[in-house]
Image (cartoon, rainbow, N blue to C red; front, side, top):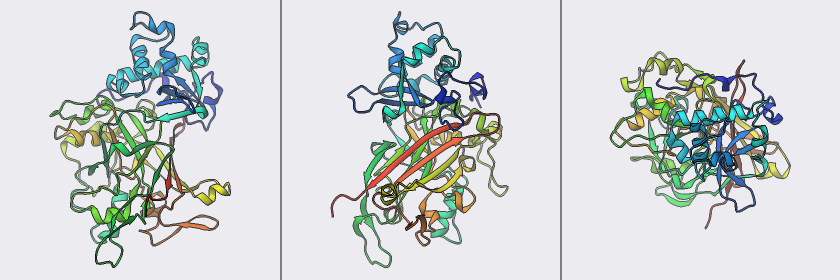
Length: 453
C-alpha cells in the first residue's frame, strides 16, 4: 500500500531509553511505542496540551515547544530535530491533536523519530527532555482530538454470527455481511476518555411476553471490546480514498468500548439500526498508537475459503499480504463489591484484532467510496472484536449466551449483563519474538444508577 509505515530504527528491539521505566519488560510505553495523548496535571487549571508517553512519564509537547530554540524564526528547529519534526511538535502542543493529525504521515513519523532519538540512551537531549517530563500518575487526560463524526462498524464475523444466531438460528448472517463493511453513525458528543462515568440509560424496551413496550432503565447493559481508528488527513467531499492510500489517512489506533443497551437495541434497531441503545456513552483510551509503531505486528489478511472475495475496491495484494494487525485485546470487570474487598478485576475474555473480517484500510475505503468526506479527528470503531472460540467473545451478550448463562466474576457474584457500580476495563498490547512489546494502556468506564424513576 502507498506509504504504509515500514520498519526503521524506531523498531529496534534492542534500543533502550535513558528513562529506566521505559525499559521494563512489561512496560506499555517503551521507546519503540511513543503514542500521543492530550493531558494536563491533575488538580490544576493548566491548559490541556499534547504529550507522548515514555515509560511511566509523559513528554510534555507544550513545554518542549516552548523551549527557546523552538522559537527562533518561528519555523526553525534545534539541531536534534528537523524542521518537520519541530513543526509537528508545535502542532501537537495544542489542546487537541487535530492540527497534527492534518499534517499527514510524514510529519507524524518525523515527530516520533525525533523523540526516539532524544529519548534513546546516550542522547545529548536528555537534560532538555527531562525538564519536559510529567509523571503519568499526576496526569488528567482529555479527549485527544475534537471528534467531529463517529462511525462504528461491525467488522468481526465471529461476533456477527454469534449475535445473529440468537435471533436467526438458521440464518445468522444477513446476505450483505460478507460483501460490505456494515456500520452506523454514532454520537460523538457522548464519547469520553478512560475514567468516564455515566448513568444507566433509559429508553423503550419490550419485556419478554409483553404486548406493548415500556420506558425505563435498561436491564441488559453491555460492553463492547473494540478498537478505535482516528482519522488523520481527510479527503475532499465527493472524492473516495482508494484502498492503497487508506492507511495514510489513519493517525493511529486506540481502545474503544461502545457501551450497549441490548434491550433497547432489540426493540429499536429495525428498520434503521441503533439509536438510543448506543448513543449514551462510548469510552476510549487516552493514548493513540501510531501505525508506524505497530508495523512489526502486521499479519496477512485472511478469510475462510468459503467467504467471497471482496469487491475490487476492497482488495489488493498488499492488503492480503499485510493488512491485518495482531493486537491482543482483553476485557475485565470489577464490581463495587470487588472494590470494597480489594479484589483485582476479573478477566472476561481475550482475543486478537487479527481475526477481524475487515481491515482498517478496507473500513476507510468503504466509508469514502460514495464520496463521504472524512476530517482530521474523526473516529471509527471496529465493532465488537470476537475470536473463533467462546473465550474470545467481546461482549457479555455472547459470553452469557443472551443472558441465559451467568458468568461467575468473584466468590459470590455472577453476571449476565452489567450492574450499577460495575467498572469495565479494556486493555490492548502487541508482542512477538524479536520485537518490543507495545501497549495501548487502558480504557475504563464506570456505571452509575439511572437518573429518575
